[in-house]
Image 1 (cartoon, one colour):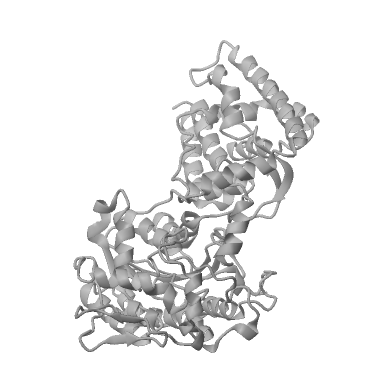
Image 2 (tube, rainbow, N blue to C red; image 1 turned 60 degrees about the vertical axis):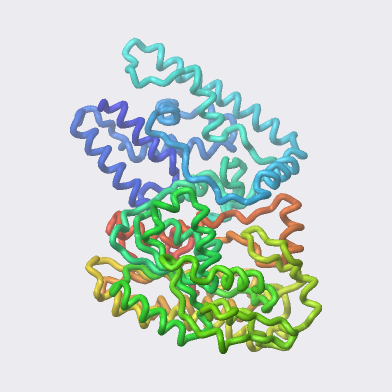
Length: 565
């Protein structure tokens, strides 16, 4: 491989990420290997300016397109030409796994684009400036290609301008600047996948969506893995060849979802669904005993399950009926703590009766239809849970006009506060306490515990929710953060590496009516569930792939930050 080809390869690596080379261990390792190859081929031709710095210089140019025409004209073309070559080289891969499908995603995207185009004057002016830049670049490349000494690695001039304007979105400029969700810096160039991230942050986040590791032989546990973030996390672990135990109150519903995956057959023999309601602490002990008898060891624990908004029993009726009608149909996949339902009948005060007709049932689902507060039996609730209507993940539609995410603390019940504390904080603590002895038995030198937290639990945050709303969830997440902070040193002695991860903003917790209204205006959260799963598993992948172990820490946007002031 010629030095010129190596330069193209290195430029492609940096152009695909464009995010602090020295802080990204994976890229740094590849860059180091490529530099070593360069030294081995032509040590006498290595320029005084290092390739590392040259790459940073030329790729910074692409992120400074909003600067003046003078900056564009005065730029040294040599570095830019290398990036141009990298853009259409075989080593430059723009493809990654697709965004998690949302039924209205394309419609919302089109509507959002229409609103942006209303202010077309600025966009038109910037587009013309970029096209002038393209002409300058193309002229510079033409000059180089006319050189008789040009190598076979020189780029195809007919595609150069098209590639730089389409692949790098130089023609997709916002009418007004925005603040990046991750780094908070202003930007005015749209990424072709993210519309709330600046180009460098978008490139890093997009690349993380495809990171994997070989987890063959490892046993992973994911709590709350039926839908959303937990589901994507479990799916990613399965595709990394791990055996995955997913806990959920509705395991048969979870089976239906996993079976819809096109590669289900490739991981079905490594998937286990266990019916578990984390509000029942005795059931947690039963679950740990099940794991101890069936697997003897655990390598990865993802404490993902959480309650943010409490739902009344009527919400769960369709889910419970599905569980009862499918009881015993997936014996190889579903494990359940079973009760004799000949003597078990649950009657709530509104007259709704759930009887298992002599079948053995899962208490994880049955507990969900037991009324615990007076409002659970209010007959008027039925109008807010219309039959046969579902939300974006296929769960029953909750059409209430308010919930505890936005209600004042005076409307918060003691039952909901207790449930949030048990599910979000006590249960993870119990699981860690009970499962650490099984992790210490593992034949793998590195084991991982990931506690999934959120921005609301950060003391260092200026988060707007710290204004009297959902204080119970804020408290629970802060306690979860402290759990990891307290245990990190003692667990590291056994090579168990615990991390706390903020998965990012991937969903809206307000009412369905409010969500529909903001989506009608074209808004979606900046990240999706695949991004969240990538963040959750990043400490695991860094450890397994790079030997980079996190001995405690609070991770947000792939960076270890302080969650307390």
